[in-house]
Image (cartoon, rainbow, N blue to C red; front, side):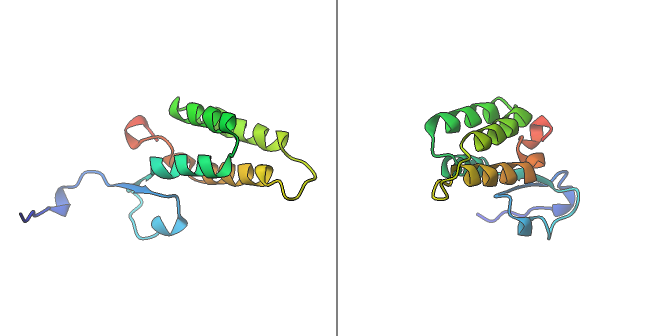
Length: 114
């Protein structure tokens, strides 16, 4: 079945993405960017190998405590920092922090003021 959409009647555009910088370029300033939940959870699991850290970050995210979540990641990063260069926990936590902080405006669903 064919559908016809009248683009002039669109009141708000929501762009759900992975946080890549390329996705922001072709759209109008009025477009609301939202980080896809799948990618958020995927990055938490990829960057934090310790289950307790994953759980805490996920719980803070789901409770919409974004500032506390980011602060926790920094504290975790500092707590696992060491001299062993093969231990990537600190650098991975830093990457997770940077990813989430860079996309902070899109962490909360647009309906909730994100």
